[in-house]
Amino acid sequence: MKLLLWAGIIVAVIWILRSKKSSAKVDSTKAPQPPLASTEAMLSCAHCKIHFPASEAVFDSSHTAFCSAEHRAQHVVR
Image 1: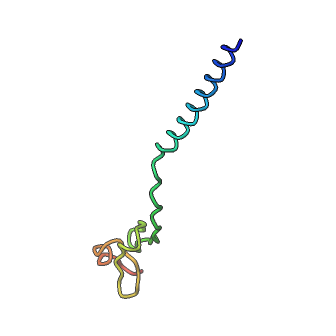
Image 2 (image 1 turned 60 degrees about the vertical axis):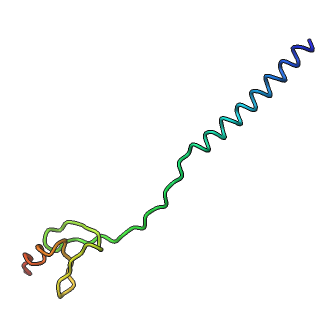
Image 3 (image 1 turned 180 degrees about the vertical axis):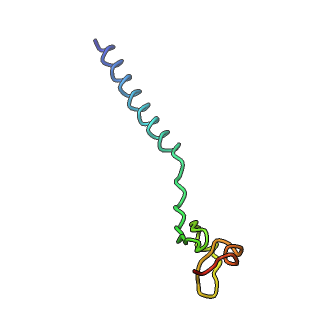
């Protein structure tokens, strides 16, 4: 009977140690999340109506946004 009690205690200790080891392994395998990139305003081209980042905008003298210099030159004001 004593032998059965000791076997139960040893099995319980091994089970607890394995569960802690596996939970630590799961936490360490998580890849760190990269920081979120800041968002940028989007503009619409006055000529073709496509949306593009504001940093790529080409403006005319009246501050109208275009996606390229070609569209700025082709644009006809109605």
